[in-house]
Image (cartoon, rainbow, N blue to C red; front, side, top):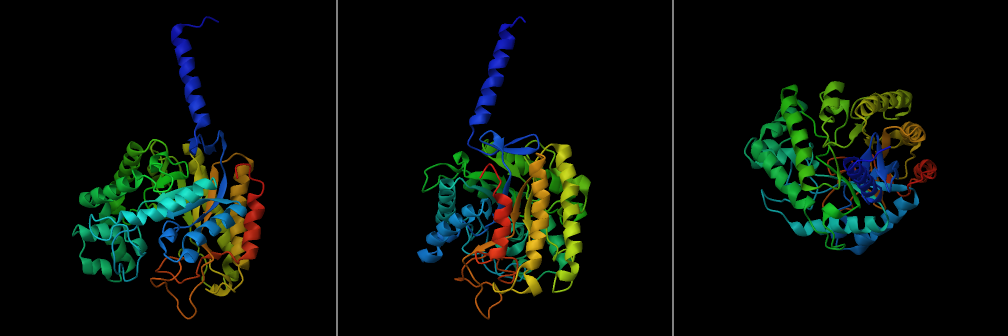
Amino acid sequence: MRVTPRSFLLLLAVLFVSSAFAQSPFVKVKNNQFILNNKPYYYIGTNYWYGGLLALVKDKAHGKERLKKELDFLKAHGVTNLRVLAGSEGVGLVNGVERVKPTLQSKHGVFNEELLDGLDYLLFEMGKRKMHAVLFLSNNWEWSGGFLQYLSWNKVITDSTMKSKLNWDDLRDNTSKFYTCEACINDYKKQVALIVKRVNKYSKKTYINDPAIMAWELANEPRPMRTSAVEAYKKWTSGMAAYLKSLDKNHLVTLGTEGIMGTDESAELFEEVHKPKQVDYLTLHIWPKNWSWFKDTSIVQGLDSVKAKSSRYIRQQALIADKLQKPLVVEEFGLPRDGHSFSPAAATTSRDAYYATVFAEWKKSVERSGSIAGCNFWAFGGSARPVNGQTFWKEGDDFMGDPPQEEQGLNTVFDSDLSTWKLIKGFTQGLKNK
């Protein structure tokens, strides 16, 4: 075969790209799989939304030391992927509930960048352990400020409206306005740029060059909220994915959706918003309690139905991922403890059975090199425990898996939940990319 100068140069270019891809320390996507160190990367992870706040706690036993011990605990059980809140917005009540504290952007356009030291430390320690973070950059829901706060700052809704307890229709009406508020979107972009361009205080790496970060996520569960907002929602998701890629060529980008349930209950919309090349993978969340998949407090009566519906929901979206040739992550799923108890002493029999169902769908995908690439259960609470006689979080309490607006202990997996950890370790033991 005659090799022309042009074909020789093309061959060199292909070899260079292949070599660069193989040597990249970052998680990449090839067809329907994540790739790390030139091998498929499948994982069981957890939601550790408060992980970037722990190092800020002055009491080391509840701060940096707790963080290091919990990362070691997770690593020992094969959990190496953590989904984390990058920063919150505003102070005071929002939608009638307390929000996450401390706050990165406490006032409109005013950032307390020292609070990012906590995220620095988390990523620094994760990097030592070869763990990977998915960082979500805002929130459709009120518990960290999110879209409602941007709308209030820009006078699209009143401050009193934001603070009052909204019914479901009012919440949808107000939150959906975010996607047509150019000033809100510009404010969002300023916070995103601040985080993405940061230099880690401990590792001295720019976030852009830090392999401990796997992906940027536009927001936690961004929904159009109203059908009338769908076109603006599509423009925002594609535009912000492209914006993130313009800032950072190394890391993956995803939207953070709940799947079909969060995209106007439309499989077509779910597929469409994940089509752009700047969106690297798909996500779905499953909330049987919130979606009324069971009603009895014992949970047992509705468990079989919950398991069946969850499996169908995962498979439905896996077909879309297969069509788009992109990975899919089941990045939130949870269930209360037996008897709907908030006590760490309560059993987790139903939850364990539910987790096993989700993990089994993931394992089948691993075995056939499928698109279901990861599972992040909600949520890890580590060594924290609910305060006796107190239902909701108060400032100064230890952080755990349940955000401030939820009963503490509702969906949290504690380090003392031995049966759950035995289950998780059983699924992660055979992974080759640990």
